[in-house]
Amino acid sequence: MQAKTIKSDLLLLLIAAIWGGGFVAQRKGLDFLGPFSYNGVRFALGSLSLLPLVYLNRRRLGPYHGSLPQASTRALIHGGLMAGGALFMGASLQQVGIAYTTAGNAGFITGLYVVLVPLLGTFWGQRPSIGTWLGAVLAAAGLFFLSVTDHFTIGIGDLLELIGAVFWAGHVLLIGWLSPRLDPFKLSALQFAVCSVLSLITAFVFESMTLTTVVAAWRPILYGGLISVGFAYTMQVVAQRDAHPAHTAVILSAEGVFAATWGWFFLGEVLGSRGLLGCALMLAGILCSELCNFVIQVRSSAKTA
Image (tube, rainbow, N blue to C red; front, side, top):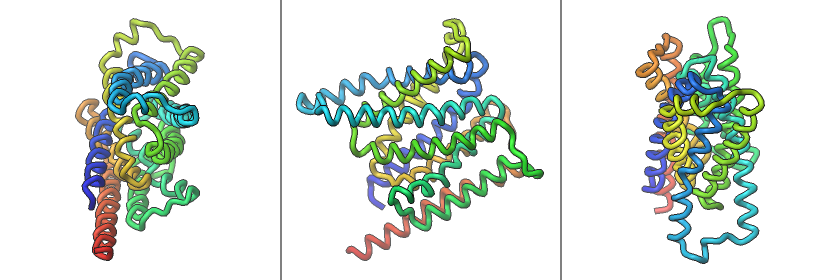
Protein backbone atom coordinates (compact mmCIF):
# COMPACT_ATOMS: atom_id res chain seq x y z
CA MET A 1 0.00 0.00 0.00
CA GLN A 2 1.38 3.39 -0.97
CA ALA A 3 2.48 5.81 1.75
CA LYS A 4 -0.14 8.37 0.66
CA THR A 5 -2.90 5.79 1.03
CA ILE A 6 -1.74 4.80 4.51
CA LYS A 7 -1.59 8.45 5.61
CA SER A 8 -5.04 9.19 4.22
CA ASP A 9 -6.50 6.10 5.93
CA LEU A 10 -4.99 7.06 9.30
CA LEU A 11 -6.25 10.61 8.89
CA LEU A 12 -9.72 9.35 8.02
CA LEU A 13 -9.71 7.15 11.15
CA LEU A 14 -8.77 10.19 13.28
CA ILE A 15 -11.61 12.12 11.66
CA ALA A 16 -14.01 9.28 12.52
CA ALA A 17 -12.91 9.44 16.18
CA ILE A 18 -13.45 13.21 16.26
CA TRP A 19 -16.87 12.95 14.62
CA GLY A 20 -17.82 10.22 17.09
CA GLY A 21 -17.14 12.69 19.89
CA GLY A 22 -19.14 15.25 17.95
CA PHE A 23 -22.35 13.29 18.56
CA VAL A 24 -21.82 13.72 22.30
CA ALA A 25 -21.26 17.47 21.81
CA GLN A 26 -24.40 17.66 19.67
CA ARG A 27 -26.46 15.96 22.38
CA LYS A 28 -25.13 18.38 25.00
CA GLY A 29 -25.71 21.34 22.70
CA LEU A 30 -29.42 20.55 22.59
CA ASP A 31 -29.58 21.32 26.32
CA PHE A 32 -29.13 24.99 25.44
CA LEU A 33 -29.97 25.56 21.76
CA GLY A 34 -32.35 24.29 19.12
CA PRO A 35 -30.88 22.01 16.43
CA PHE A 36 -30.73 24.66 13.69
CA SER A 37 -29.37 27.33 16.05
CA TYR A 38 -26.62 25.01 17.21
CA ASN A 39 -25.68 24.03 13.67
CA GLY A 40 -25.79 27.63 12.51
CA VAL A 41 -23.39 28.82 15.21
CA ARG A 42 -20.98 25.88 15.04
CA PHE A 43 -20.67 25.91 11.26
CA ALA A 44 -20.16 29.69 11.31
CA LEU A 45 -17.35 29.16 13.82
CA GLY A 46 -15.93 26.39 11.66
CA SER A 47 -15.94 28.62 8.59
CA LEU A 48 -14.30 31.53 10.42
CA SER A 49 -11.62 29.24 11.86
CA LEU A 50 -10.46 28.45 8.33
CA LEU A 51 -9.96 32.04 7.18
CA PRO A 52 -6.35 32.19 8.51
CA LEU A 53 -5.56 28.97 6.63
CA VAL A 54 -7.09 30.37 3.45
CA TYR A 55 -4.91 33.48 3.82
CA LEU A 56 -1.71 31.55 4.62
CA ASN A 57 -2.29 29.12 1.76
CA ARG A 58 -2.82 32.04 -0.60
CA ARG A 59 0.50 33.60 0.44
CA ARG A 60 2.31 30.27 0.14
CA LEU A 61 1.12 29.76 -3.42
CA GLY A 62 2.16 33.25 -4.45
CA PRO A 63 0.41 36.13 -6.21
CA TYR A 64 -0.35 34.14 -9.39
CA HIS A 65 -2.43 31.60 -7.48
CA GLY A 66 -3.76 34.14 -5.03
CA SER A 67 -6.58 35.22 -7.32
CA LEU A 68 -8.53 32.57 -9.15
CA PRO A 69 -9.52 33.02 -12.79
CA GLN A 70 -13.17 33.86 -13.28
CA ALA A 71 -14.01 30.31 -14.38
CA SER A 72 -12.29 28.85 -11.29
CA THR A 73 -14.10 31.30 -9.03
CA ARG A 74 -17.43 30.21 -10.48
CA ALA A 75 -16.46 26.55 -9.99
CA LEU A 76 -15.56 27.26 -6.35
CA ILE A 77 -18.86 29.04 -5.72
CA HIS A 78 -20.90 26.33 -7.42
CA GLY A 79 -18.98 23.60 -5.60
CA GLY A 80 -19.36 25.36 -2.26
CA LEU A 81 -23.10 25.80 -2.78
CA MET A 82 -23.62 22.15 -3.72
CA ALA A 83 -21.46 20.79 -0.90
CA GLY A 84 -22.94 23.27 1.59
CA GLY A 85 -26.48 22.34 0.59
CA ALA A 86 -25.81 18.62 1.04
CA LEU A 87 -24.05 19.36 4.32
CA PHE A 88 -27.01 21.42 5.56
CA MET A 89 -29.50 18.65 4.84
CA GLY A 90 -27.36 15.92 6.40
CA ALA A 91 -26.41 17.98 9.46
CA SER A 92 -29.98 19.22 10.02
CA LEU A 93 -31.54 15.76 9.88
CA GLN A 94 -28.77 14.45 12.11
CA GLN A 95 -29.15 17.19 14.72
CA VAL A 96 -32.95 16.98 14.84
CA GLY A 97 -32.82 13.19 14.95
CA ILE A 98 -30.29 13.04 17.77
CA ALA A 99 -32.83 14.72 20.04
CA TYR A 100 -34.89 11.51 19.85
CA THR A 101 -32.18 8.85 19.93
CA THR A 102 -28.82 8.12 21.55
CA ALA A 103 -25.44 9.40 20.40
CA GLY A 104 -24.40 5.82 19.61
CA ASN A 105 -27.46 5.11 17.49
CA ALA A 106 -27.08 8.40 15.64
CA GLY A 107 -23.45 7.63 14.87
CA PHE A 108 -24.11 4.14 13.58
CA ILE A 109 -27.18 5.00 11.53
CA THR A 110 -25.41 7.96 9.97
CA GLY A 111 -22.79 5.41 8.95
CA LEU A 112 -25.30 3.84 6.58
CA TYR A 113 -23.79 6.04 3.89
CA VAL A 114 -21.08 3.35 3.77
CA VAL A 115 -23.60 1.35 1.72
CA LEU A 116 -25.11 4.27 -0.17
CA VAL A 117 -21.80 5.69 -1.42
CA PRO A 118 -20.80 2.69 -3.58
CA LEU A 119 -24.39 2.33 -4.78
CA LEU A 120 -24.63 5.98 -5.81
CA GLY A 121 -21.05 5.95 -7.11
CA THR A 122 -21.90 3.35 -9.73
CA PHE A 123 -24.08 5.95 -11.46
CA TRP A 124 -20.98 8.17 -11.70
CA GLY A 125 -18.90 5.47 -13.35
CA GLN A 126 -17.04 4.38 -10.21
CA ARG A 127 -16.29 0.67 -9.65
CA PRO A 128 -15.73 -0.26 -6.00
CA SER A 129 -13.74 -3.40 -5.27
CA ILE A 130 -15.32 -6.59 -3.95
CA GLY A 131 -13.72 -5.86 -0.57
CA THR A 132 -15.52 -2.53 -0.31
CA TRP A 133 -18.84 -4.16 -1.22
CA LEU A 134 -18.38 -6.96 1.33
CA GLY A 135 -17.40 -4.44 3.99
CA ALA A 136 -20.46 -2.36 3.16
CA VAL A 137 -22.78 -5.36 3.52
CA LEU A 138 -21.32 -6.26 6.92
CA ALA A 139 -21.62 -2.63 8.04
CA ALA A 140 -25.24 -2.51 6.88
CA ALA A 141 -25.99 -5.69 8.84
CA GLY A 142 -24.47 -4.06 11.91
CA LEU A 143 -26.67 -1.01 11.45
CA PHE A 144 -29.72 -3.28 11.18
CA PHE A 145 -29.05 -4.97 14.51
CA LEU A 146 -28.42 -1.61 16.14
CA SER A 147 -31.45 0.36 14.96
CA VAL A 148 -34.24 -2.13 14.13
CA THR A 149 -36.04 -3.72 17.07
CA ASP A 150 -37.24 -7.33 17.42
CA HIS A 151 -40.63 -6.13 16.17
CA PHE A 152 -39.07 -4.50 13.08
CA THR A 153 -39.88 -0.97 14.20
CA ILE A 154 -37.70 2.10 14.10
CA GLY A 155 -38.00 5.30 16.17
CA ILE A 156 -38.49 8.79 14.70
CA GLY A 157 -34.96 9.79 15.67
CA ASP A 158 -33.44 6.76 13.98
CA LEU A 159 -35.61 7.36 10.90
CA LEU A 160 -34.38 10.95 10.57
CA GLU A 161 -30.80 9.76 10.89
CA LEU A 162 -31.51 7.20 8.18
CA ILE A 163 -32.81 9.84 5.75
CA GLY A 164 -29.84 12.03 6.61
CA ALA A 165 -27.49 9.21 5.63
CA VAL A 166 -28.58 9.69 2.01
CA PHE A 167 -27.38 13.29 2.09
CA TRP A 168 -24.12 12.31 3.84
CA ALA A 169 -23.50 9.83 1.01
CA GLY A 170 -24.07 12.59 -1.53
CA HIS A 171 -21.71 14.85 0.41
CA VAL A 172 -18.94 12.21 0.43
CA LEU A 173 -19.27 11.79 -3.33
CA LEU A 174 -19.32 15.53 -3.95
CA ILE A 175 -16.22 16.12 -1.85
CA GLY A 176 -14.48 13.22 -3.57
CA TRP A 177 -15.17 14.85 -6.92
CA LEU A 178 -14.49 18.47 -5.91
CA SER A 179 -11.42 18.11 -3.66
CA PRO A 180 -8.87 17.36 -6.45
CA ARG A 181 -10.18 20.32 -8.47
CA LEU A 182 -10.52 23.11 -5.89
CA ASP A 183 -8.57 24.68 -3.05
CA PRO A 184 -9.52 22.52 -0.02
CA PHE A 185 -9.47 25.38 2.50
CA LYS A 186 -11.59 27.69 0.36
CA LEU A 187 -14.01 24.88 -0.45
CA SER A 188 -14.35 23.94 3.23
CA ALA A 189 -14.81 27.52 4.41
CA LEU A 190 -17.43 28.18 1.75
CA GLN A 191 -19.45 25.00 2.34
CA PHE A 192 -19.47 25.68 6.11
CA ALA A 193 -20.64 29.25 5.49
CA VAL A 194 -23.44 28.05 3.21
CA CYS A 195 -24.54 25.47 5.79
CA SER A 196 -24.40 28.09 8.55
CA VAL A 197 -26.49 30.64 6.65
CA LEU A 198 -29.15 28.06 5.75
CA SER A 199 -29.24 26.81 9.36
CA LEU A 200 -29.52 30.32 10.85
CA ILE A 201 -32.32 31.25 8.43
CA THR A 202 -34.22 28.13 9.46
CA ALA A 203 -33.52 28.83 13.14
CA PHE A 204 -34.85 32.39 12.75
CA VAL A 205 -38.14 30.98 11.46
CA PHE A 206 -38.63 28.03 13.83
CA GLU A 207 -36.50 28.66 16.94
CA SER A 208 -35.50 31.32 19.45
CA MET A 209 -31.84 32.01 20.13
CA THR A 210 -30.25 34.48 22.54
CA LEU A 211 -26.68 35.44 23.35
CA THR A 212 -27.18 33.92 26.82
CA THR A 213 -28.02 30.48 25.41
CA VAL A 214 -25.10 30.64 22.98
CA VAL A 215 -22.67 31.49 25.78
CA ALA A 216 -24.12 28.71 27.95
CA ALA A 217 -23.43 26.21 25.17
CA TRP A 218 -19.84 27.35 24.58
CA ARG A 219 -18.25 23.92 25.26
CA PRO A 220 -20.27 21.87 22.73
CA ILE A 221 -20.11 24.79 20.28
CA LEU A 222 -16.30 24.98 20.48
CA TYR A 223 -15.93 21.23 19.98
CA GLY A 224 -18.55 21.11 17.24
CA GLY A 225 -17.26 24.25 15.50
CA LEU A 226 -13.47 24.18 15.81
CA ILE A 227 -12.65 20.48 16.13
CA SER A 228 -15.50 18.54 14.52
CA VAL A 229 -16.15 21.07 11.74
CA GLY A 230 -13.12 23.33 11.28
CA PHE A 231 -10.48 20.61 11.62
CA ALA A 232 -12.17 17.31 10.78
CA TYR A 233 -14.20 18.35 7.73
CA THR A 234 -11.21 20.15 6.26
CA MET A 235 -8.99 17.13 6.80
CA GLN A 236 -11.68 15.07 5.07
CA VAL A 237 -11.23 17.21 1.96
CA VAL A 238 -7.45 16.74 2.15
CA ALA A 239 -7.60 12.99 2.88
CA GLN A 240 -10.06 12.24 0.06
CA ARG A 241 -7.53 13.40 -2.51
CA ASP A 242 -5.78 10.02 -2.09
CA ALA A 243 -8.73 7.80 -1.20
CA HIS A 244 -11.60 6.24 -3.18
CA PRO A 245 -14.97 7.68 -2.05
CA ALA A 246 -16.41 4.23 -1.26
CA HIS A 247 -13.22 3.28 0.62
CA THR A 248 -13.45 6.58 2.49
CA ALA A 249 -17.04 5.87 3.51
CA VAL A 250 -16.16 2.50 5.05
CA ILE A 251 -13.39 3.99 7.21
CA LEU A 252 -15.47 7.00 8.25
CA SER A 253 -18.30 4.67 9.30
CA ALA A 254 -16.12 3.91 12.34
CA GLU A 255 -17.51 7.16 13.76
CA GLY A 256 -20.43 5.03 14.94
CA VAL A 257 -18.10 2.91 17.06
CA PHE A 258 -16.50 6.02 18.52
CA ALA A 259 -19.91 7.65 19.06
CA ALA A 260 -21.09 4.64 21.07
CA THR A 261 -17.84 4.62 23.06
CA TRP A 262 -17.93 8.35 23.86
CA GLY A 263 -21.69 8.14 24.54
CA TRP A 264 -21.08 5.40 27.13
CA PHE A 265 -18.16 7.26 28.70
CA PHE A 266 -19.62 10.78 28.85
CA LEU A 267 -23.40 10.25 28.77
CA GLY A 268 -23.79 6.86 30.41
CA GLU A 269 -25.47 5.34 27.34
CA VAL A 270 -25.35 1.53 27.36
CA LEU A 271 -25.69 -0.75 24.32
CA GLY A 272 -27.62 -4.02 24.63
CA SER A 273 -26.63 -7.34 23.08
CA ARG A 274 -28.05 -6.35 19.69
CA GLY A 275 -26.14 -3.09 19.79
CA LEU A 276 -22.90 -4.85 20.64
CA LEU A 277 -23.47 -7.27 17.76
CA GLY A 278 -24.02 -4.28 15.49
CA CYS A 279 -20.76 -2.75 16.65
CA ALA A 280 -18.90 -5.99 15.97
CA LEU A 281 -20.32 -6.27 12.46
CA MET A 282 -19.42 -2.64 11.72
CA LEU A 283 -15.84 -3.24 12.80
CA ALA A 284 -15.73 -6.45 10.74
CA GLY A 285 -16.90 -4.52 7.70
CA ILE A 286 -14.20 -1.88 8.12
CA LEU A 287 -11.43 -4.46 8.61
CA CYS A 288 -12.69 -6.57 5.72
CA SER A 289 -12.63 -3.58 3.37
CA GLU A 290 -9.15 -2.57 4.50
CA LEU A 291 -7.65 -6.06 4.23
CA CYS A 292 -9.25 -6.86 0.87
CA ASN A 293 -8.13 -3.58 -0.64
CA PHE A 294 -4.64 -4.13 0.76
CA VAL A 295 -4.44 -7.56 -0.89
CA ILE A 296 -5.69 -6.14 -4.20
CA GLN A 297 -3.07 -3.36 -4.16
CA VAL A 298 -0.27 -5.82 -3.28
CA ARG A 299 -1.25 -8.11 -6.15
CA SER A 300 -1.51 -5.15 -8.53
CA SER A 301 1.96 -3.95 -7.51
CA ALA A 302 3.39 -7.45 -7.96
CA LYS A 303 2.01 -7.69 -11.50
CA THR A 304 3.49 -4.35 -12.56
CA ALA A 305 6.88 -5.07 -10.95
